[in-house]
Image 1 (cartoon, rainbow, N blue to C red):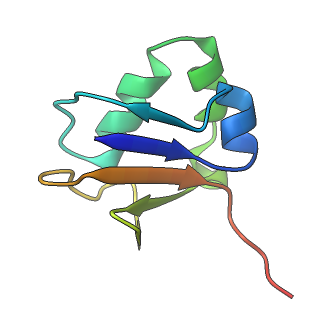
Image 2 (tube, rainbow, N blue to C red; image 1 turned 30 degrees about the vertical axis):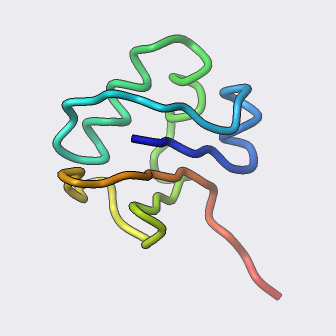
Length: 81
């Protein structure tokens, strides 16, 4: 599965994407796996309230299932004008 990072999430992790082999059932489970990798991931995912997630390019919540998913993207909330 491809995991994409945007804006300050990318800056904290230091890379735009990872390809992961995961057994995570939900986005929240995936986040826990990522947080356990190292301190930069822990910092990026410290406050899930400050993040949004898309699953296969559709906005989702952190309890969204990952069965059959090819891409998960994390980004801060967007504001428009």
